[in-house]
Image (cartoon, rainbow, N blue to C red; front, side, top):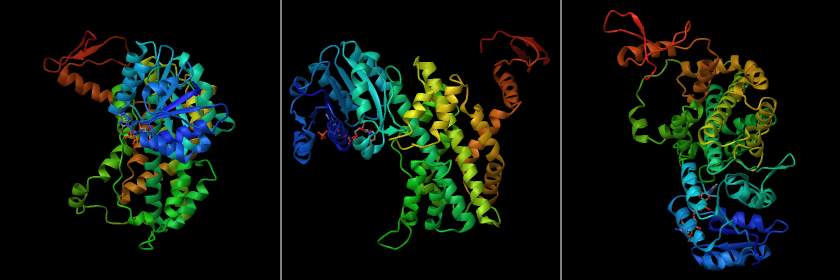
Length: 479
Ligand code: NBP
């Protein structure tokens, strides 16, 4: 055996990851693909990689040092299960099977349990950064056992993106922890993208600036506290001119946003965990709304406000939008980290939230300077109940909140949809409220379902005899 790491699945992600691995000192990479022609093709196109080409799973296993380690990069779902079954046949106890695809974390928990029973280690590994990240350095979120991390750690550190001198990979936690964190990463990505889109829309409608002029605004923002990959590529997209029509590309792209499902997973999981990820949910639903042309076409006659948005001072308005974006972004990240905290508690993972924020600083789609502030917050207070309450964010939100409120109310008055801006503000105000109308909800629940309530002034559980004489009785806390 000559290879120290193998890759199964040589579509765009797998072949790029294999090339990345092969380019690092000390690695020798065995490759296998179901359709062997693709393996031959990769070997021919990249002789510099020195790949160990294999055409059967037996050959693949025989070409790897022990403990063997193989990264699966195939279509999530049935393809992954088929490859795992094949590898379990040819691998031995102590070997490591890594799934680098976008698996749902509950599938990873199930697979890890089944594979572990054979003595083989199973690692669900989130990989972010798309094709380019896979080739040049992704952000990597591996789960799985401590034993597998001993072998995988140095290999993954060698191929990960580097942010401020540190490789963007950390052992997230056991079984499905890596894929869980990758899922939430994608959810945050949905929210961040929606917020940027709302900011663009408000500026365009409020100031009449052209996409190219707004590209300049985003490029300027990218020099400050909003600096991030998503802001940077937003400027690039807005600057693009359509060759066929000469119009801004953004004006000829159909306004129906697609989704591959990781945003929906994040929201579904959050609902199960009881975590209010309202910004991520609004972003996911905004894509759904955009993708219902039949509903939108019959709704154009719904009445809106009399007056269009009229902005007197364009520069001041743009600065307000910037602050609203920053504040809403803080909320989205806070909600995402809240989901990771709750997932860790539910599934018994020990996840270092500061380390997660650090490995997102490079390689992945949400990479941003801003993640350093999150790392600082968790370094100061590791068991922070909610990120928003960290001193840095309290101060930042304090600076932004007046502008945020102006933007949300301006958008509502002008009839411009800003679901992520406005729901983030509602979440913020909900968190900071002394009293919430949840008390009334408890009263209603007690009225129709005898669900009982607690009191602010004494211990115990109570029920009002609503259909009787409406006196209060002490109740069993069983509802
Ligand atoms: P695809 O998701 O398009 O999968 C194609 C690969 O799966 C091919 O190698 C194909 O082999 C193999 N495959 C299938 Br389909 N069924 C198989 C089976 N039953 N047995 C063995 N192999 C099978 O590839 P991709 O776009 O490179 O993505 C790979 C994984 O990485 C996915 O889980 C994806 O969600 C994840 N991911 C993608 C990105 C991205 O930006 N694209 C980013 C992060 C993660 P064949 O050649 O024989 O058909």
